[in-house]
Amino acid sequence: MSFRDEFPSRLSRFAGAKPPVPKSDHEVSYAEIERWLTSSWGRGLVARFKPRLQDSAFRQAIEAHLAALPEWEPVLHPQ
Image (cartoon, rainbow, N blue to C red; front, side, top):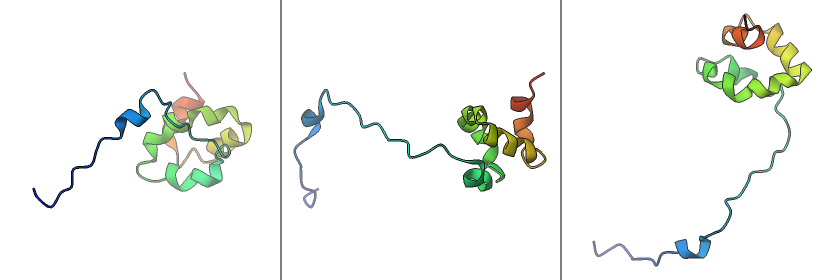
């Protein structure tokens, strides 16, 4: 189409460049993600936040809210 300009490719400028790595600001707390976890799509977040169970405060908060987070029961108490 005549109204589209053909721009030169810039891909070669980035050949061999390492992708940027995002910096972590802080470890998320239960209070920060409580609404996500208790939402209807929060079940899909168990795997994402499972490593946070190493933090005792996070683990205790999950334990305290197991009634609202039944998908965490097998993660917390595997048989």
